[in-house]
Image 1 (cartoon, rainbow, N blue to C red):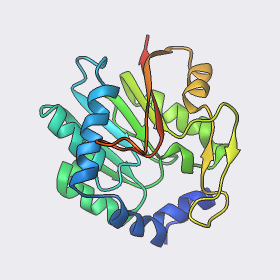
Image 2: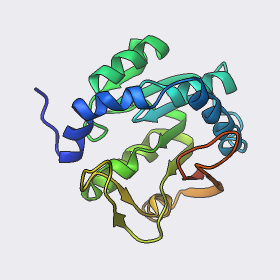
Image 3: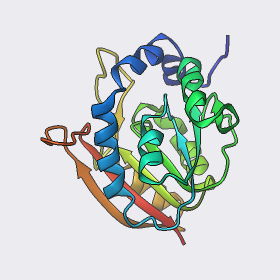
Image 4: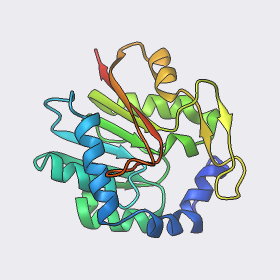
Length: 206
């Protein structure tokens, strides 16, 4: 059995991560994701390849395939069951299964992380930020719960499994080459294309 550096990684690699698959798929989610990326990536012209950190079964990448059919897609996923399903969509050679902290992601025009940083142990966030910045030639899209100050909140009756903070601000402070290009908010009560109260930030490496 693989041993991970943090309790949060063990949590998502195991049964809870597998159960998450069933709650987060379907045509409605795909439609919402398509609308989301059309807005969030409007300024990311010329991005021909993307690597997603924490891709799960590929619902975000499926939306990107519809939005930009010629984009080369890659995914990193810690849960083996999700990674297996993801490989059926993007190809096994384009999937790395394991911890973000331990893998060497491909370098792409766009690096993407959506709803994943909130579940990572805050102590290792600087290492994850370095991985994200290192994986992009130009664009970085971060889409997470936002809070101006770090805070932990209960997640499905589990403690220390969800954290909110200014992830994008911390990335730009740690990596001054990353500059903010665009940002926005997607609301869970949107009557057409709801998301999970996600604040997104598109950064460019300059």
